[in-house]
Structure formats: structure tokens, C-alpha cells
Amino acid sequence: ESSLIPLVGNQARRIWELANGIDDRPVETDRKIQSIGAEETYEEDLTDGSAIELEFRYFANRLSKRLRKRNLLGHTVSIKVRYDDFTTVSRQKRLDTPSDHEHVFFETALLLWNKLMQDKTSKQPKGTKKDVEALGATTKVKSTNFKYNSFNNSSSKEITFMDPPGPIRLLGLTVSGLDEEVPMQDSLFESPQDETEDKLAGVLDSLESKFGETVIMSGALWQRFHGENGMR
Image (cartoon, rainbow, N blue to C red; front, side, top):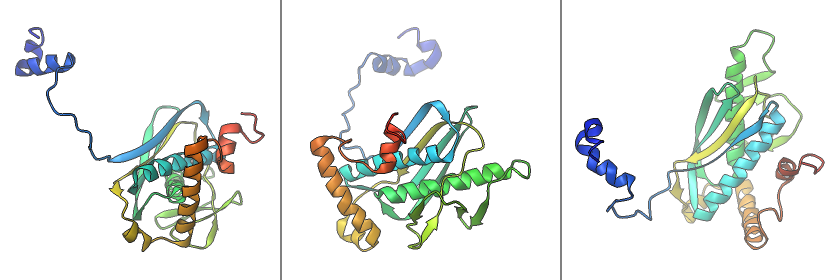
């Protein structure tokens, strides 16, 4: 303790006690969770949009499960991206309606990713940009890889993840601004797609609690874990 006094003054005693596990403050067991996130650092950098799509599908699936388990809804979705030179950037979007739905988190991540990639490629020399059309706060990428139903528009759109301008070392997805779910109020804003997903999620959660997380999964998650030919 005496050796700390020249460095931290009258805080020396407190720092010494904490370093030795001495703390009389009561343990907080009901502290409110502020956010829930998932991220991965990759041994091999990701270089194409299809692989990045699978990662964000996986993240959205995990976060949705964790929120349902705690009966929480999230107001804000954010993505985290780290390039191979360790430059790290993030983007976020506040949802019009708080949610615990996997498709909402995934589609928001898709919009944030494509907007980030659009901003990134717009700084490159002409002739290197992707075929991108700006749509206000969102981005439409002309592709035929897969279709999804936007939670802001019931019409089907053709959209996919843009390829990154360089290797990606880390990806992350976080949901924050968490509140406890209020079933009656939430039901007023649910779309038919949300209601269907709620029913399906309830069945899957029940199966996973009995037989484990890998008992049943979507094709995209299967591909992430096992590769296209089941050989990963």
C-alpha cells in the first residue's frame, strides 16, 4: 500500500483493497442489461459478401434467441467491422419499433453494411465502385443472389451483401436500448411476418431446449457451420 501513495495519493488504500479482493459494496444481482452483442475474429480474413451474409445471419439468430430468453426487445442495431489493417468502424440504426426478431436484425445489418461499403467504395478511384443505387437512408444493390422481405416494405426486393473493398478481420452485431417486452402493446405493431416468426421461434426454442442448438437450423446456418457440401 505504501508504495502506491506517491502514485495515487489518498486512493492508495482503496486500490490496495480492490487488488486484494476486499470490497464491502453489495453485489448487484438485478442490474439492467444495456445491450446484447455477438462478434467473431477470423483466422482467415473474409473477402466476399456471401461469407459476410452468413456471419450476420448467424449473429442475428443468436441475438434473437438471447433476447427472447430474457423477454427483451431492442431499439437500436449496430454493426462493427474491422479490416486487416485493424481499422475498426461501426454503424447503427434505431428501429421504428423495438424488436426481438431475427429477420429485423439481419435486414438492418444488411442495410448498414451496404451503406458502409457504398461510402467506402465512393472514396476509391472511378471504375471500382459496385453497381449501387442510393435509396435515401438505405441502399439497393442490384443482384439476383437471394430475395428478402424488408420490414419497412412488404414488397420483395432483390438484395445482397456487397463485397468488401479489402479483407475483413472481425465482424460484430449488437442490439441495444433494451426494454422488457410488453405483449399487448407489442402485438399492436406486429406484421404477419413477425407473427409467423414468433410462432416458429417458439417451436424452435422448445426443440433446442430439449435436444440442443444443432437439432434444427436454417439452410444458411447449416452452410455456415458445415460448408456448402457439408464438409467444413
